[in-house]
Image 1 (cartoon, rainbow, N blue to C red):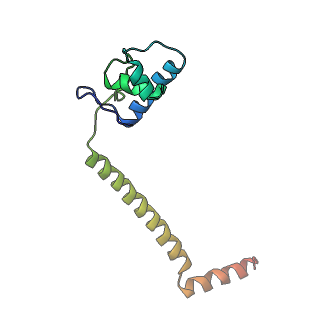
Image 2: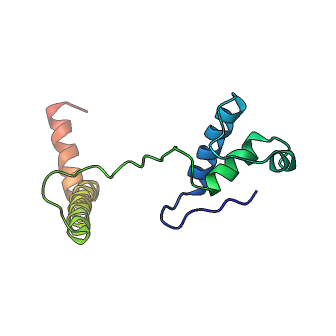
Image 3: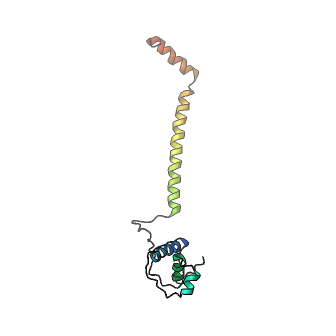
Length: 130
């Protein structure tokens, strides 16, 4: 199947497939042909609705259009991508620093000098906790 596309309007291969499929369905449901096609030409394409739709498409007579959505409108002030990355990197660094400080505090508690540990255990014995 060879499909030629008019130079003034470009379609994607998916749009062409959709247009040809829709028109072939119309032709198969006995819709009138938009071109006068000779009997020999119809016999050559074996009365195939898809081939007839392709002939009509190449002749630019199809009344089928493609509606392409436009991008959504963005409200507010636009920020540069570099500024956003810097902000994200700054937040990540702050989180890492907080995590490191917390871990250092836990390590410092675990690594108390032996004198302090002995003093705490003696105080516990005196108070009758142990």
